[in-house]
Length: 128
Image 1: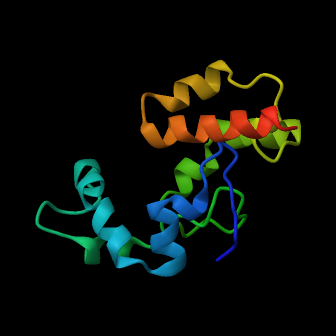
Image 2: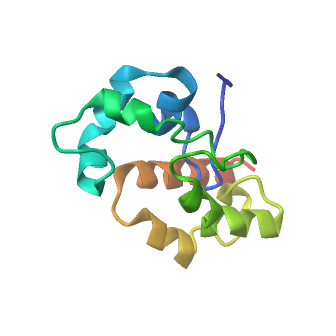
């Protein structure tokens, strides 16, 4: 796995369970995703990590151009944050003078790993 791979939004792919399930076939990470997958209706209430693994590949990172077979392909294809970075020719939002913007604020939606991504991007921006 790459030493550091970062999504446009600032999520560190190497810390992401979906990425680890795909790239490392990590059963512990798959187990950690079961509750969320059940709540989304992607696996049954009586299913576990094995069912999550059967859905892989889950994610190869948002910059991967070969995501057609990825479970979250529709989400990746319609990601407004990635599209914005592509349009502005940025590697990530931390390179943007407008960060944090309304699009990014809406994406955070109270999720801790999204807040962590913002903090990461703000630290990168401060050091540019």
